[in-house]
Length: 314
Ligand code: AVI
Image 1 (cartoon, rainbow, N blue to C red):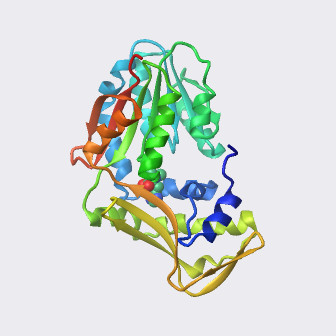
Image 2 (tube, rainbow, N blue to C red):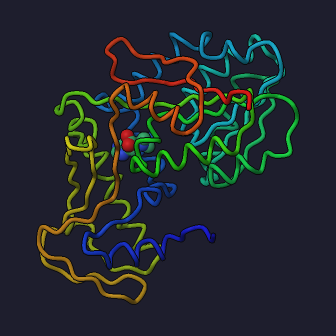
């Protein structure tokens, strides 16, 4: 199946009764920089709590793979700071460790590769520019070294629950016995904490979301006035999830790639879901996707879980 394009996703998404644009398109070069700024915000807790988990548990997490050769495959490497904590721990005990960041963003890949190579001299780094699963599949045929696949930072939360399970099943199918995955799940917590994380008072998340409209203008010849939209973050306890929207401040018609789209005053475009999990969901997902759970690592406040799963013998 051909990969989705920005143009097709935007044109199709704006035609729907509930207008929506998939969150993957938030990450152009400016969007990636803004997301890095979000990660540094005091209220965006996921970065710090996951760092705390990795600082405390890196030796335990990497123990099943320590000693021999191992490839650490990083899906959505971000700025690489969390991966570095794990890699440093593993590389100290296993000098034959290699690092394989996989990302669609050339900028993110170059940064991750450079940062890791400079901080851990001697580490073999082999970046792959691809969709996560395609990149992983492109590793086959590979040597006998087991993989440790990292899917950190609650990236799984940006997939609807059904899509998350489908993704994990595809991930499982691309791996072989002895491979491990480490996945970050953001747990449900108080509403005010969530609200502050997804609608910060410095306006960085607002700029991140509105950048999508600037990207539409730039890349798809749009005439959308970003000032005529506002960033809205809502909490849906029934799922549970935080959701991001762009809300039209007025009734208007916008043009994108030669097509017209009408928006009512107050009408919203859905741009992102960030699912929050209950701890029992984590074990259930491991089983449903065909993994064996090896360990579950939490921060002191139990706000976040990094789950270590293994592909068992057939
Ligand atoms: C990348 N992802 C895990 C972030 C999240 O928390 O859902 C994206 C984000 N959107 C707004 N703030 C952060």
